[in-house]
Amino acid sequence: MERAGVPMYNGNVPDNQISPESLVTKVIATTAFQNFFNTIANGGFLLLFASIAALLWSNISPESYAHFWHKEFSLNIGSASLSHSLAHWVNDGLMTLFFFTVGLEIKREMLVGGLSDPRRAALPVAAAIGGMVFPALIYWWFNGGASSMSGWGIPIATDIAFSLAILSTLGRRIPFGIRIFLTAFAIADDLGAILVIALFYTPQIHLNYLLGGVGVCAVLFVMNRFWVRNPIGYLVMGLILWYMVAHSGLHATITGVIVSMFIPARSRYNTDVFMKMVRERLEQIKCDGDDCGYTIMVNRSHLDAVHSINVACSRVETPLQRMEHAMEPWVAYLILPLFALANAGVVLGALDLGTAALHPVTLGIIFGLAVGKPLGIIIFTWLTTKILRVNLITGATWSMILGVGFLGGIGFTMSLFISALSFTEPVFQEYAKIGIIGGSLVSGIFGYAVLRWATRNRSIS
Image 1 (cartoon, rainbow, N blue to C red):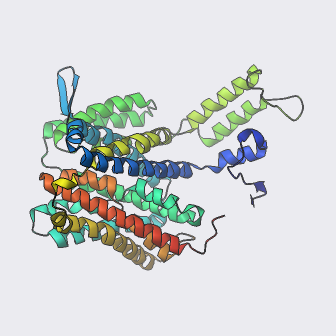
Image 2 (cartoon, one colour; image 1 turned 90 degrees about the vertical axis):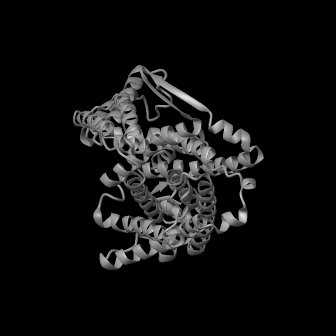
Image 3 (cartoon, helix red, strand yellow; image 1 turned 120 degrees about the vertical axis):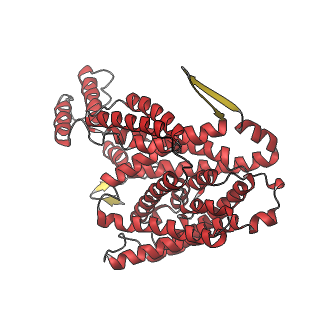
């Protein structure tokens, strides 16, 4: 198959056996969004394995599971000291980096992505709002007036890693627009969940630390205005802000989102300057005849030109893009699996499974995720198309939107995170985990089935 007269690379031929033209096509075929999609999707499968491992470990040896994750670790810097369990360091420390990456994604989407144009953003934003309102209402219906009502925020979240992982299994039969739609509304959903955590899951505020945090934000603002590109400066200020936020009463992970908003989104070179520099350096690469071969090792001029082009590439890329690309693999392949391993363990033998399955917390979360999410997403999306007179994304159908709505009901990571903030009673936390796992599993199965049926007549070539 060819596109615009250029042979498409099929991915099955080694690089040293294909033509230079096909190799160039292979390199440029992977866009920034595809890199993001592939990284998060692959991380979703690793997240699944970590969740299964947590369930097995917590039931085969519950004592060692609890002992390992509740072991105390201390961090001492001068007179300041922080001592927490290993699980707490994962949930409040490493997850701050997860929230930092989410914040970068949100900022990027609001500046240049699916949330930058109000008309383009209308559908995924509406889907995110509907996907939060309906699950919260369903949870309230099961738990209204009870002490467990504090868990209403648990079913409002979408796990972007799991949902994109399932979507990726359907391959090319899924229109590109559907991938954009799911990614955009999941990111908007993350923003909503972050706001819910900040506004409704903050027990009390200590003004002295909060004012200290405001001072750190002022320094970050100055760094942004003076276009500080070095990530070390943001890391140092981020650590100070994390300490301030952790002691102010707000959840420490919000630090990640705050710092991400100050990361510069403008590059040192504009595209015109970049293109001029690259053309000048390419002129240095001259060969005898038409075929240069492998000259970089033997021709100093060629090597210097390549190094200069590499520097130009680093300077035309914005700090926001560079940090996001650097963080995505760490989050997808290490931080989220560790979070799942530390939080997805449920000791089933210690629970009355009949009581757990029928408890309002469990039912509210399962129905909130598996029913409330798809209903809210498709109803709010439909209302937006009618009120604003906008069409669905090219290639999308309403059955596909329903399938994506079910995938939105996979609330694993953020739901587990909110459940830890919602309840002080350990048994409610266990019920919540069962509800999250059950609701996410049902949502994933229905989402896959509906999307496979909706795309049954599409070519997968």
